[in-house]
Structures are given as C-alpha cells and as structure tokens.
Length: 137
Ligand code: CMP
Image (cartoon, rainbow, N blue to C red):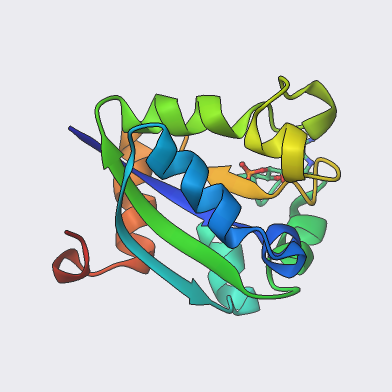
C-alpha cells in the first residue's frame, strides 16, 4: 500500500471539475485518504516547489499556483504514486494520452490541472507539507 499527494490546481478548481477529477481516482482503485481545499500563500508555493527554484518557469509557476484555491489530497492504494501519474498524463497536456486528466481538463503546461508526487520519497515530504498524520485515514 502506497501513499501519494495530489493537487487539483487553480485552473481545474475554477472550471468546477474537482468532483470529476476525484472520481477518476476513486474509479481507478485509489482511496482518498485525506482531502482539503485551501489557498496557498506565495511563501508556501515557493517552498513546495523549491526544487524548481532555478528553473525559468518558477515565477510563473508560483504566480499560477496562488491565483486561486487548490484541492490537496492524499491518495492511497497499490502502486498509488505511479497510478496517479498514469491517470494524470504527461506534464504538457498537448502530449498527454487521450483519456488522461490533463488531456481532458488542462489548457497548457502551466495550467495543467493537477500535480502528483513523482517519487515515494517526494510523496512523503509533500504529504507532510499539507497534512498531519491524524488527518490521514
Ligand atoms: P507539476 O507536476 O506541478 O510540477 C512543476 C510544474 O511546473 C509542472 O507541473 C508544470 O505545471 C510547470 N511547468 C511549466 N513549465 C514547465 C517545464 N518546461 N517543464 C516542467 N514543468 C513545467
């Protein structure tokens, strides 16, 4: 049993597809072990994405992630980290396979609907960033 972190980004929240995206997870064998909607501060977004701080897209990424509320969730299940990434599709929605979340709901590489942890190590760090252990069940 694995855990991974999902973020439904401001573009997808604004579009009103929170329920449709969460349904993709549950319909594909993942359990929503914790979830909440929140507004990130600039400092929080910069800290969460610190690994990208030297990349040219960092400022745009932070601006976008604080442009509206997000929904953060802990997903659990067998192979949860890879399963979530398969359901999300490629980072650039133009390259995302048909039927994936990004192909169906994302506009471009910045407004790409969802984030998912890219390793189990990062998943543990990202989950702890948003949730206390007693909130996860
Ligand atoms: P995410 O999985 O949230 O991780 C970092 C985000 O940076 C990524 O999704 C994209 O939304 C955004 N981004 C913008 N440009 C790029 C790029 N060239 N390569 C990777 N990520 C990018």
